Structure formats: structure tokens, C-alpha cells
Image (cartoon, rainbow, N blue to C red; front, side):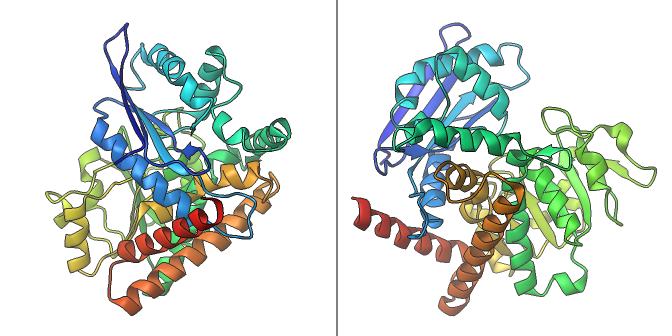
Length: 387
């Protein structure tokens, strides 16, 4: 049972919104706000549970940051809808009492942080992380650290848009090395090219793993010899679509639904939830699936992959860096610089993946089962320490 579940109806458009607070720790929950047509209460409930796992799994007694509980917001509206901004503003106004006390939020699928910050200011919020700020002795100084981190750019892209995907890439590289894929010329396919997918592609390519395909809302771009990821990254629009004018003559365009047909050893679903299902899992050709998106693989599909010997690095491990980076910066565990951010993320993600795969191997269970045990143990440690 969740701590709190809210279904909201916009009085202007009739569109629905949802807020789930799965668990509170120290009176607070953390988790982003997504906006997409077709978003459901069950989806947001799954995402909120995932946030509880994600918060707990990175707990380290040596950090000032202590994990929160998990929460999530969702709005059933396309971000391309002309009414989308107004719907978001009215949703935030309705949720304002909870944003001021319990729920710290940020961008998620279909929501950009800069737009979210603007709309939050319009409804009278200093920030979307008030619930976290109230736990700090000097909220203004802490908020200044986060703003400083957001002001950093890394080769033309904001640091905040890089940290999550950098963590996914580090998780993928750590798992691929364990599986012996790196020495065998592993290639990657990334489904989704927004902040998470784009950064994952960038840092896999920089690590020497050719990214042979990316998929965005316009379709798939494929090159068996590897795409020019940097060129595509810097051509993206606000919703993560690469400008097709930036393609090279050897790049091939494929329909969006053919993203599973691209030959690659590493598959990174980095966009919507529930995209690998029982009906299409037979098309997965990779030996390693790294979940950059939240709940992209259904339980039945993951069971089928496990039966075929495909390793799945679960979302609440692989994509934890976006959430954790906010709090490591806010609580002063790292300086708001690219160097400090990437060093912390690499150490934590590679450590989590190593522990997860060690446990899975020794116990004869899936990586998800091992990671769930890790999260539960850390949650118990937090509860024992803070109640």
C-alpha cells in the first residue's frame, strides 16, 4: 500500500493527473513528474515504487545525503499539446501543499527541468524540491549548490542532462566487462535520445563502444559502423529528436518500430515504460539490457530474457544517478562540477553493478532479485538509523 494516492482532474481540459507517495523517509519522498498521453495511475504507482528502491539502493553511511522515500507524478497529456503548459501549471498549483512539505520532484519523460522550474515559480514555489530543502540547516546555500551544478556545461550539453546517462553508461560498461562483451567488439543500440538516452550514447561512444542505432520520436537512425553521436546530440530539439539534416550519407533511417531489429550486443531502453513486452521480447538480440528508462521491461519479458541468458541491469540501479546527483550536490557530498559529479557516479554505479552481479552469481538469482535484496537491506539500515 502506498502512503498517499491522488487522482486529479484538470477543470479546464478534463485531463487527468496523478501523484503517488509510495513511502516517506524523514517525512519526504523524491521522484520526478512525467507527462505523456496515456499515462495511467498504475504506471505512476509502478514508478513511485521504483523510486523507493532507487533512493534506498544508493544509501551510504558516509554520505551526508540520506535517501528519501519514493514518489512520482504523472499527467495524461502529450507534452506537444498546446494546452500542456497550462495543464502542468494547474497540476502544480493543486499539488503545491504537498510540494511544500512531502514531495520533491524534477523532470521526467515529457517534462524539461527548465520548463518545470518556470511553471513552479508561476504558482509561487521557490523550487520543486522544497520538501528536501526544509531538512537542511541552510536551504538557500544548498539550493545555490544545485543551481551551480545546473549552470555547468559539458561539451555543449548541460551537466544536469548528462549525469543520468553517464551513470547508465558506467553501469553498462561495468556489466559488459563482466560478461566479456567489451573485448569482443560490443555495439550498442539506444532507444530514446533525450537527456538520458543522449548522454548514455555519448559516454558509451567515448568509451569505445560503437553506438550503431538510436531511436527517437521520428524513428531509428542506424549505422553498422557507428553513428556520429556528438553530431546528432548537438542537433537535438527540446524533446530529444535529432535533426535528420545532421545525418551522414552512410546513416540509414528505419521506422521507429524497428528499434529491436538493430544488431547490437548492448540494448539500452531509455524512453518510455513497458516497451519490452512478452509480445516483442523474441526480437531482442542483445546479450545485455541496461534499463535507462523507468520500468521499460515487463516482468514476463524479463523472465523470458533470463531464460535465454540475457542479463538485465534493472532501472533502479542503472538510472539512479540522475536522482542521486541532485541530492549529493544539495547535501554537499560533491562539488557542483563535472569532475566531482562523474567521479562519484562512476564509483557508485560500478560498485552497485559489481555487488549486484556478485550476489546474483553466488545465489543463482537474477540481477533484479539481487538488487532488490540490496535495496531492502539499505532501507532497513536507514530505518534503524532514522526511524
